[in-house]
Image (tube, rainbow, N blue to C red):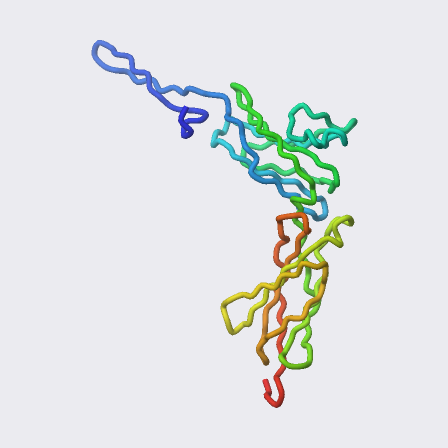
Length: 247
């Protein structure tokens, strides 16, 4: 069946009558196609959430169910196998929707691997995606950090020292982060990024113009994750004059 007609397509039945033709439209239905998980994100905040996105068909009759299952320790290497066993007593968690994403709420961060899959179901049948195996840390997106102070550093050339409060992280991840600083002069349109690969909450911005105001913001991420936090609220700092020059 062509992809554009995955679930329903319309045709017409024409019955020839002696004096006229009567057209009866009707629908031919089909079971859903197997969805494919595109990405999952673990958003760490108060009441942490796990959200997954998948391919889907624009069919109001199809209901999608996202399921999460923790694996037994001796089954982690078989995560992608549908027959792998789960932890004894582990509750299977799920949510249902008619759209391309669903969110599981109040999810604890776990050092254990778990798997998720999506089932598409309508009145004619169901289809299940291949399971995806993940660790919470690898899809973790933390809250944004908060800049607490920007101060001028004496000397030449002028500098600004930026302090921020670290992004909220799970206890096991607090010392395993990296941050990115973005700043620009209010006199120019471009941005300059400064990458920090160590766990730090302060930095000195160098090679700045004197008597100039800069906007600064910061974002952070877990070292094992590909997801950055949102950028912090921008703060402004102004450099001082050099030598005898007055601002």
